[in-house]
Image (tube, rainbow, N blue to C red):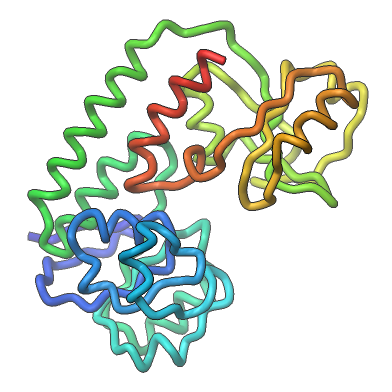
Length: 259
């Protein structure tokens, strides 16, 4: 049976795959599917599950990949993500890696297809099916939850310069699950912005993400006093990681909506 990735590439199931994962959230999923022993390389940002990844060699970051380290590991498959990894990296890997499995979840429910793809290609279909069943149950709870008042929230991922997310992002679609929107601040998916009275008046509040910038409660307290609008610190992993953490992310969303 063939499995289709985000670029439409067909992949055959391979029980003996040697996998390099360049996507932190998918590294976690692969480990949770029982594939830690077949993951021969990871990025330095692949930190979950902590005990399992300690035995897996690092091959750089998601953007600054060390191609020679990967070459020496002789993987049969490299898992990439369209948003997190750059095309020149994929092109270079294609010259010596037999299979590039490209992923691109756009919304929370896409994690079901992602788990099935990983489970299918790497022969962990039963484990993937169990994970998908758990996700479906949690997603149903989220859908059944009474919707609160729609809110327009500015989701901040960086400062100096200040940066946010566009409506065309996974995070924005996570927020949409609880009826929250994000302001349209331009064509960039992660636009820079300046604080202005017009911007502040047009939002209901601010969400400061714990990653990639390490916003803290102290940042939230200071900003709330400055702009006079509610400011919440949110767990960036719960809001933006695909795969395993997305299951916890659905629970986190329900808790966020109740605040």
